[in-house]
Length: 265
Length: 345
Picture 1: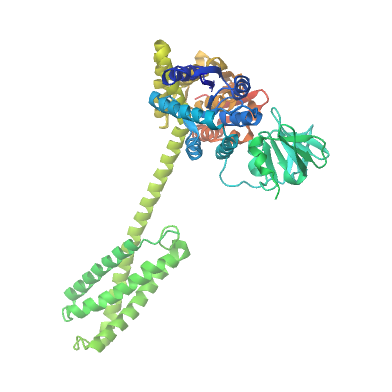
Picture 2: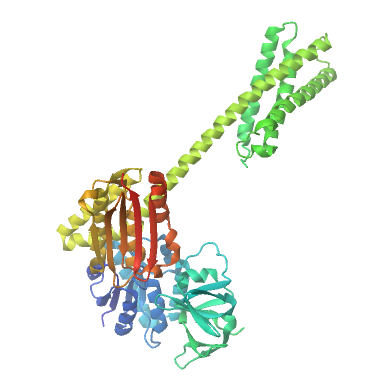
């Protein structure tokens, strides 16, 4: 059967152009779907199970890196994970990270010669994969490094001691040490304690560098948990990890991306 | 603390040696009863000592940290101290060398008169030499400051250019252009025209200029038209400029960072996109210009509120209109809202 691909690109003209160039560089590749944002890309990939993903790095809502991570998390274990190719116009840090992780990327505007070389390589990867099966753990490792490289690094910021949340007309002061976990909701971040929760507007990405990394662990794209508030880690029938918390009844799912954090000493 | 430049010190030492030879020659010319070689020996020993004390000692003074030369009284005391030390050390050393090696035995004729003229010559030559080095140091310092200031100005200009000509935006636009050439050459040409106008105005505006509000709106139109080709139906925009305000001069590309912020932080990150509205209206003796978007608003995060674009606008407004011009910026659940209030020029 001919290999299939999914294109995720928010600029319609560029999606068309990539499809047209791919038709020349790799005629037998079938484009299963073209989508314009990260969430749609995850959905379409789970529906079509393509062999190759072309993900734009910057997309509205969820970018290409996050979409790939989410997809890896939700991917069914019996199907090999698609080969990933990131598409970007200009992002020197991302390019360095791609080179370091040996992840394929395509630069916009697409250069036909370069795309042909990428197609050649991908053919090889797919053939090899048919023989040996895909290594999802390797992909997860690559994605983890890429996400780290993409997050705002630089000098460690001053650590937050207190979360200030507006509740009605008052400001509630919640000591960071009492927070059980942070969870990104639509436009807010839920700050959940043993005895209740407050909402703040600071995005999780901005909050994360201000938390003590030894104590607060990211376990999912939208979840950061205080390690000392975790009672135990359970594995379900599908092999997924869940956190049982002290003082809270709900269980927190752990993304495959971060499953490596939990292992016995 | 300015690091000590040893090659400059060596240069100073050589200059001092030349100066000492000059002093000995002049001394010789005015009092011919002395031999030249002893004069040269003493002048070199005294001069080198003074140089060592003043030129090396000045870096130990705290007030020399910035300019390389001590300010006020310490500077004067250093020079006088250097001259006194130079005279005593140089003279003693010279005497020692002369007696040890039995040089110039006929030299000591009139000790008191010799000492007086020697002191006078040392004082005058020491002051002259120090003054020369002081002025040179000062002009070097001023030159260095000027170069630093120039570099700062250059950096700021580059930063402005960098924020306006963001590479990601440029390459994405070029990619769209490349795609459009194949499928719709007429639109490709229009896009290229907008791009040329946008690039030209951005490069021109990095020099401090003003242009009419009409031109400002036209440049925003170029930029938004480019973005519209890229974003397709996800971007809608309205530009609203009353005719009576069209001729009013404004700093070139004053509004550009606001519209770019709206695109980058407001609409590009929102799946369904949204609308940007730029409008100007008269309010008494002031003009109010607003840039509104229906983007992600406060979810874009607080850290962008004081970004480089806004700071740059505030600085330009302050430079042109002082306290009479104001920029307000806020984000809420419905999007971002920027408002500039200017006195009518």
